[in-house]
Figure (cartoon, rainbow over the protein chains, first blue to last red):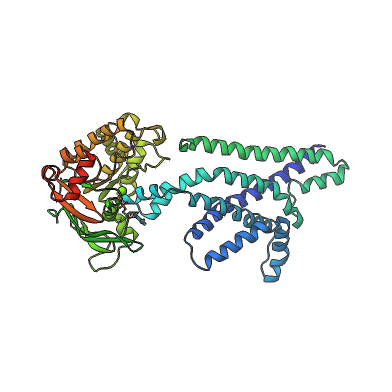
Amino acid sequence: MNGQAWMLLLEGAWTTVWISGIAIALGVVIGLVIAMVRMARIPFIDQILVLYVSLARATPLVTLSLFLFLATPTFGIAMDRNTAAILALTLNTAAFNAEVWRSAFLSFSREQKEAAMACGMTNGTFFRRIMLPQMFTSSLPGLVNEMSFLIKSSPAIAVIGVVELTRVTNRITAVTYEPLPPILAAAVLYMLIIGALLKLQAIAEKKANRLAM
Amino acid sequence: MSDAPAVQIHRLSKSFGGIEVLRDVDLTVYKGEVVSVLGSSGSGKSTMLRCINWLEEPDRGTIRIAGTRIGVDDKGRKMNNRELAAIRARTGMVFQSFNLWPHLTVLQNVMESPIQVKGMHKDEAHAVASALLEKVGMAEKADAYPFTLSGGQKQRVAIARALAMSPEVILFDEPTSALDPERVGEVLQVMKNLSAEGYTMIVVTHEMEFARAVSDQVVFLEKGLIIEKAAPEKFFTRPETERVRRFLELSA
Ligand SMILES: Nc1ncnc2c1ncn2[C@@H]1O[C@H](COP(=O)(O)OP(=O)(O)O)[C@@H](O)[C@H]1O
Ligand SMILES: [Mg+2]
């Protein structure tokens, strides 16, 4: 592999990182919002969200990406490849994250809430200052697990023409006729990306390890 | 309203699933008083305490904190979350199981409500919290996290947390029942000090000696009814009902 091949590979890696990164950030927040709304058990809306979560979890990413890219123009929404890719990844990961957040909601102790109420905190203050920081810590392993899963499934967006880290290896092979080196290099890059993610998790957990009770 | 009693409970009733847990409970607690609430398990002591700060919503009756009605406003309208929070901020509660917030240090546990609820400046809250931790003998553990503390230490922090809001009354729900026997004394000592300083306290407890030494009134609950209410000397030496006589014999 020459310098140009490496440049292409790094560009592909960057595409994987930024598209996944946006989907991860959106997916974590949207997952939290879904879990919160579900805790309110609003009739009808609750059923819609249950349906969304089961559909999104059951639909392969390739199918979802194709659907969003090919079907949305018929509804008058023009979407470029990258937007469709981000949307597909976000819809997928948000559904999984919603379940992670939800279990953190369900397992949160009532006693701590009563202590907050007794001190005069509003529900909002309690959520922001007491519940959310702890939910974040207890959900972090599940969320990071889902993040690395998302990065590993992200090659699915190649189906709509996004040149990410896996797709780019094809392109390099088309010139060099040597499939193995770019694929091995791509594998190393995936490991580096996920390694960085785990490193971040370790740092976040260290900051929060006082929750060990 | 500054001369109003710290807590006035009038005809408080509460049922759970059709079973009456409190029946027409009346109780007035004046400023600086300590009221001990005794009674066997399931008699409604916790429910009574939890109605005072509206952690449980009563079915009937009125409760006033320093003259202000809680739960329902002057026009008879139910208070919203924000209004309830504002009046709860004038009471403090100490739970059997401490209920400290595990992600915050001891100092942060005490500073949190003054800052978040009263809007107190951080520096001032720090000073207030440090002084309170000093008072309960926990100043050395200010930067420790709750999981590193013994039960007695946790409970003393929980007391400091309740004091930090300068409440009109502090509600104690069996504050020593979850403690190892050798840790009970340190918590009772802190509570005795508070009473000597003039804090108003309602204490659900099984510690007879404490109740006798510290209380201004002793109240006995039986199946949701207050069947005796007396000064401690009278309550412990000349109870009026057979039920209380038996209770005192059993716990002697
Ligand atoms: N949230 C609740 N739901 C249903 N029943 C309850 C609830 N809280 C208390 N009770 C019942 O009310 C009665 C009084 O309980 P409680 O006030 O906790 O008594 P005590 O504190 O004197 O032991 C008990 O029979 C208890 O089972
Ligand atoms: Mg109880």
